[in-house]
Image 1: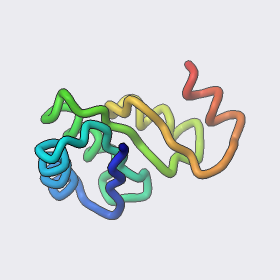
Image 2: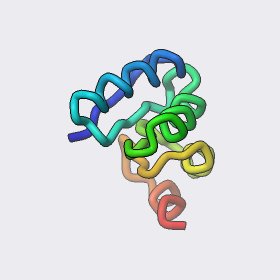
Image 3: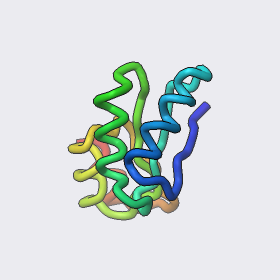
Length: 90
């Protein structure tokens, strides 16, 4: 199961991620358009090392790069873009 956090800032995202973790969820996706999404993924990765953090609604190869640099372990895209897919495999 993957929990999806949408529209939360970093502080809220970490608080919700902690609650989800306590409830047994280990895979958490933050949507890229959320405010502070990169900071949220970085904070979740740092503060909850047993959680697999990911980034969703990723639209460009540059967003893939930024997401992975922030700590995203997986990427979700709402469309099939060969450049985005290629970037996730690097």
